[in-house]
Image (cartoon, rainbow, N blue to C red):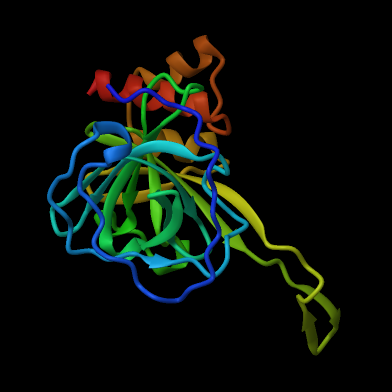
Length: 229
């Protein structure tokens, strides 16, 4: 079991050159050399501003080529779709296109948070989801959370839309995957109940005073449906 420790070294590099291959096992935790992966990260020229979690969390990275990078400190840049990873006291970027999924841990969480490449799911283009979605509940029916980054535009005239003064915003969207089909969790309780199609669910929600707009309630609802099925 990997225990979290405080890591205070954060060196920001300006070089655009590539570094060598990264060890599959992190010697910071394991104290020994190991095989290397063929995926090569790049030095960062700047640090991002919008993250799935601004804190550095220790976790594991599972690459599309089958390699696993164990016990690295990381954080996920929502805008650039890459992981900022601390390797040998340096912060480097690992492009999201190389990554199948990753998971991380912190003292605030009772279990790891797992993020899966959107390519595993059938999101439509209209849903504007890219990068990774957090798998909140797994099972026959899955519950996903995606953080969507957008810059709201403000109309200053009938023919001109000015967005230069607007700040980028991050909103959370929740999705249900059922039989390989993705449904966005709706503000309509009736519509959500129709998607989940559970005879016992309506009474369970009423008796437990649950709401589809609350993340913890949503997790309880999906757990109940998976057991009920």
